[in-house]
Length: 92
Image 1: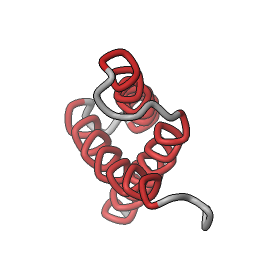
Image 2 (image 1 turned 180 degrees about the vertical axis):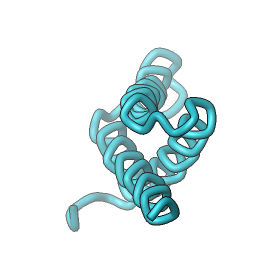
Image 3 (image 1 turned 180 degrees about the horizontal axis):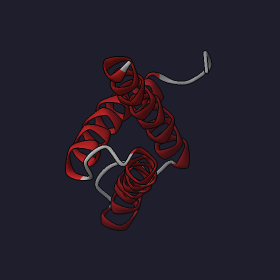
Image 4 (image 1 turned 135 degrees about the vertical axis):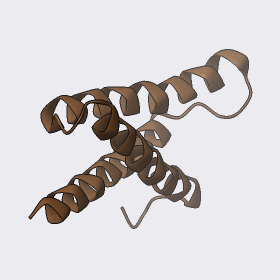
């Protein structure tokens, strides 16, 4: 990950925020059904990150690169884990 360009780190950090927001909303909406909320959040994260890259490819606005989507998904996964860890620590 040290060889990532600055752009990939930006996608990673934005992904963390997206993952945290999506997981927080999913836990709130589905009343602490954590496994379901994990799956739903991760699926939404995949759709958003890769969908943004597809949008860039189809419209020509931006630069399509699959590694951008992967960096966003990795960051989003970290965001999901952080929120889940927070929930776990709050309930203990």
